[in-house]
Length: 77
Image (spheres, rainbow, N blue to C red):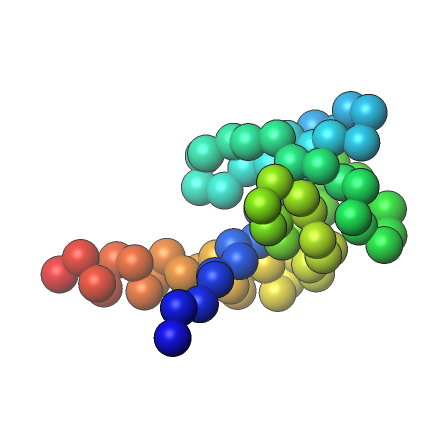
């Protein structure tokens, strides 16, 4: 069964309801219109189809990013 994996993305800028987010150095713009709460630069969000859909606690984001990195490195062997 196919599954979507949401990777925590760090907000680096916000302007007019659009955030630039960074994941492992890759940056993209996402809309903040669907978020139920306010976010700030340095917050982490989950992104789906170009929209930030959920704010993520920074500790949880760091742990998820660490695990994703470990999994991706181990699957390259």
